[in-house]
Image (cartoon, rainbow, N blue to C red; front, side, top):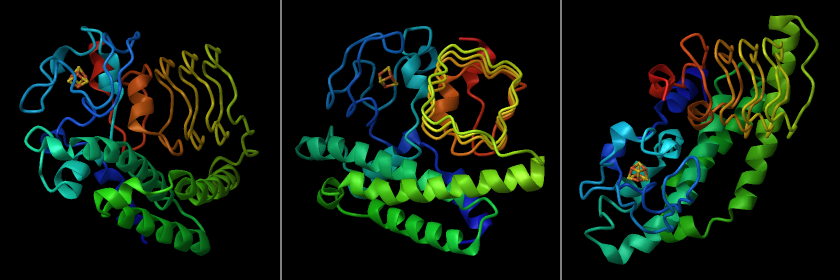
Length: 283
Ligand code: SF4
């Protein structure tokens, strides 16, 4: 698959709530916390979800204690389940399919997340062999999203994730080595996988090409840090201060991670990530 096609796929992965039956507001459970004002069990509609599947407090989610709702991003899994898997049949009009639909949603979400990472991997300059293997993997994942509900529910997600994860690790090593040697002309960044840097002051740090997979960066101060070429897959960026930070070529960054962090107009992001509106409104 060509780079340009992969760029189009990665950029097309975004939620269209107008085509979804409010699945994130219904299928998932909500635990009362600083992110959610209420407890809500899974497979139950949130009391704020209207008949038309719109949120009645959409404009004031953060001020009403539902910060978590402004962070969530299904990458388009919701509309796929609603319009493709269940062919436009809503759980309100067809309660007999509701349980199945609510169970399929988290499966589709995971498939979409993997598709986003693999498509992103294909947007880089990589070896032909890696490109071929990633392309095949992407095709397999895309095919899975077209399965019937029962078949989706039968997927062994652990076995499905394993080869994807290995490929992404390999791609990350390759890209970070290439960037270090040929673009930044620096020694490849260190491996800090899963490191606990909660609340750590990393202001202005040059972290280029570091491996921060699964790192705990909650409330870390990353103001003006250089995070280009950093692998951030699965890193927890909740409330991390990324004002003025450069993440323009960070690897495997998601909209959810960015929505949960605190940035500003000076934060540089990859093209497939939008600056959250709450950064500018200060809520
Ligand atoms: S508050 Fe609104 S966005 Fe959040 S779960 Fe409820 S209906 Fe959905």
